Image (cartoon, rainbow, N blue to C red; front, side, top):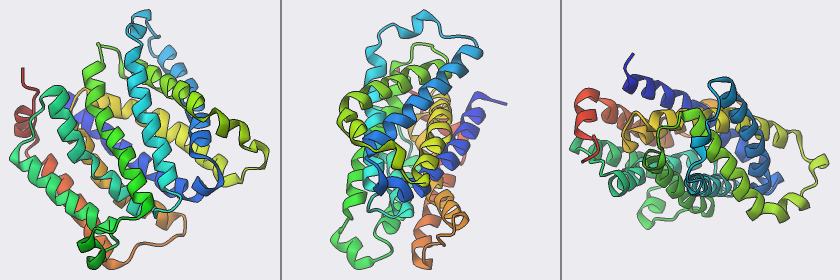
Length: 303
C-alpha cells in the first residue's frame, strides 16, 4: 500500500468521525459554553494521545524543540472548535457541515502561500463544483436566499472557524520537523488545552458540571476520543502524505456522513432539493481524487 493510499484511507475515517461531532454537537451546543466543553474534551484527548505516543515509541525530547510551533497550531484548532460549537447553537448540522466543505478552497490558497502547492485545473474545477454544492446546502436550497446571499448567523460564525482549520492543514506540513504524527498530535493537542484554559477559564469556572444533561457528557466523550484524539492523528498522518487541498477534499463527504448520523439519531433527512447540493459535494470529491497519480505529481510543492 502506497503512502498516498494510506493517506486517503486516513481521511476517509476522518470524515466519518468528524460528522458525528456535528450531529451530537448541535444537541449539546446550547447546554454549555463552547470554550468549557472544548477545554474538557481536549484535556481528555491530550491524555489519550499522550499515552498512545508513549506506547508506540515514546516522545523524544527533540519533539519539543521550538514549542511555539504547537502554540500556533493549537491556537488555530482551538479557534476552529470553539467557533464550531458557537455556530451549532443556531446552524442545523447538515448546513454547518456544508460550511465545513468550503475549507478545501481556503486550504488550497493557504497551501500555495505556505508551501507553494499548485492546484491543477482538475482540482480547481472540483473545488468549484463542491463550493456550489456547499452553498446550495448552506442556503437550504432557497434560490432567493442564495441570490441575496442571506447567510445564517451560526453559519457565518462557523465559517471563520473553518478558515482557521484551512490554515492549520498546510501549517502542519510547514512546521513538522520529522516528528511522528502521534507525537506531533500530542504537542498540538496539549497546546490547544493551554490556549482554551487561558481563554475560557471564566466559562469553565462558571459551569455547573454536576448538573449538565447527559447529552453534553456523551458529546464530550465522543468528541474527545473520536473527533479529537483519533482525527488529529488521522489528519496529521494524511497531511504529511497528501497535498493540502486533496487532504481537505474529504470534507466533501461530511454532509453525507452527517445525514447518516441524523437519520441514525432519529432526526430524519433533509428535503430533496437540499440533497442536490450534497450530491454535488460527492461529485466534487470524485473529481478531486480522479487520476490520483497524475494529480499528485502536479500538486507537489514547488522547490
